[in-house]
Length: 139
Length: 139
Length: 139
Image (cartoon, rainbow over all chains, first blue to last red):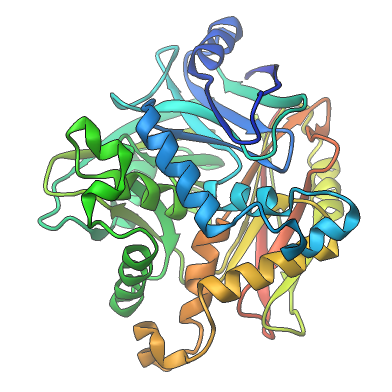
């Protein structure tokens, strides 16, 4: 069994952001030499998500509006977590709604995807440095 | 390490649908010959989910009502994604709430499940052909 | 390829509860002897979640309030699932919002975590015995 590990780093200019990381995951897969296996991609932080959906800016606008209506950032006093001095109580909830990680099948050396599947880093509390872990196992 | 890949195809008659795919996943596991490992099951589309819950029609009714109240299909003009000519902006959000994939442990050649766990394909934008990927790795 | 399986058992005194199970997962990993691989952790029940977030009691209060507002336990007659004689229709929906399982990378014999990642058992229908499965594969 082979394994390969890679870390990506992000600092998004806005609080909420969507970054297509499919090319970086494909690069890591190539480096790994794995032909058949599984690829895990997850943020190493708890106010961000990795998810698979469409690379369409209108959709990302809809996600942001949906999440902001469901779990508003303000008033920040609405979240007991923010009594710790943080202002990201909403971001910890948004992350649960959108999920933490994705696991992707690797077949014949490629991410085994349908036609529209793209991997996104979803940032819910940006403007500081964050990491994403890629872990690949297989043969 | 062994690996096995199988694709299922669905066309549901309604926009929203729940299909119990546990027997198909068990069949794929038997074909694989894997005794200890992991089994990934995911839709290859981005307006559907694979999830694990109870095979009870009242529950599926509750899921549909919950999702439709949270993310209504209409008015379709409420979703910026629909400016692309699609009418499934809601389905891309429903998919995130219900999740994309499941990873199931394989132990002694069987899906390592509690008494009520069943694998479902959840369709949020049906009435056309869709695929589900099963990827099994292990020994 | 090595594999290791372990089951944890819980009985929480309240309907909703959060239990940090990171030490138990670390213990299972040590027992496995796996240095590089993947670790799956999932409830064997369908009214509970395993998720990764912060070990902060204010945040857990926020999660409970968010889930209870989104999917109220009462009136129990609001859920068709409860016509089966159950009163946990809400818990099956809360589980989908918070997710079922986590998959964690194993690197150099450790859970490959960022600084704040902790694994939680989230109980949405407690006061009875429930199980969590840990499955580790790798080398």
